[in-house]
Length: 126
Image (cartoon, helix red, strand yellow):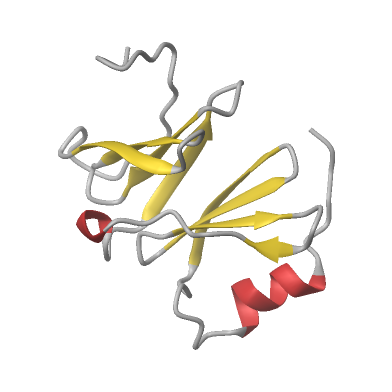
């Protein structure tokens, strides 16, 4: 993983534009290749492409509204992302199709601070 400072454009979108429709207090962040994933207090994961200095389509679902993102993990191949939430929920995102695959509620009594995918098939997550 290479170090890339946050560009002024991305910094502006995250910290200055408080009226932005996807704005929320940043709660966790991870990088995969040239992409920056920023989870926020409103349950949205904002995605930025460092190479073209652009915000991509956010990762969000109405079932995750107002549920602060507390952890983000991408598989080594970048095909899946797992996100943890304050209310003990996990979400599994298919990054190839860029869509939510599964929501697992009440997986933990408190917020999920870390999660990792060891093996995934269309039928189950281990």
